[in-house]
Image 1 (cartoon, helix red, strand yellow):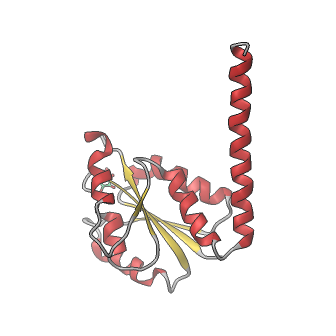
Image 2 (cartoon, rainbow, N blue to C red; image 1 turned 30 degrees about the vertical axis):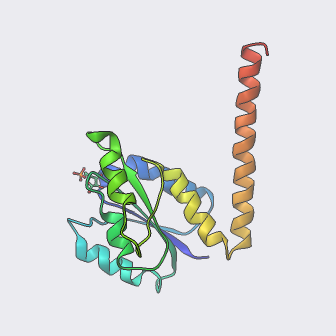
Length: 164
Ligand code: RP5
C-alpha cells in the first residue's frame, strides 16, 4: 500500500492535525508524520518532498496556519497529490491560512479542505490511493456506512426527545 505523509508547519498545529492522523490510523494506512516549515526549515521540507514518490508515498497532507505557504511549497517540488489543511490561528479565524493555501497559481494544484478540516484531508488522501487499492476502498465504504448509521442514530434520538 502507498504511504501518506502528514506534514505540519509547527507542532502547535498538532491538535488539529491529530484528527487526520487518527483517521489514517483507523484505516490502517501507513503514515509518516513530520514538522516541516516552508519558512523555518525550507531545505528539510524540499528534501523530503523531492524524494517522497520514490520513498513510497501516494499523497501528502500539509497543514499550516497564518501565512500558510507549506502546501504550496510542497506542491512546487512534487507531482504527488497535495492536500492542504488551513489551520485556524488566534487571529483572523483561519481566513489568512485558507487564502494562502487555496489560491495557488495555475499549474500547481493544492486540494484545499475546510479550515481545520483534518478528517476530510485524511479521507481525501485515502480515497486517492484507494483508486488502485480495492481493500482500502472497501474500508472506506465501511467507514461511510458506520458514519451514516451514527447520524441516523442521532436522528432517532432527536425524534424521541421531541416526540416526533
Ligand atoms: C505556521 O505558523 C504554523 O503552521 C502554525 O500554524 C503557525 C504558528 O506557528 P508557531 O509560532 O505556533 O510555531 O507556520
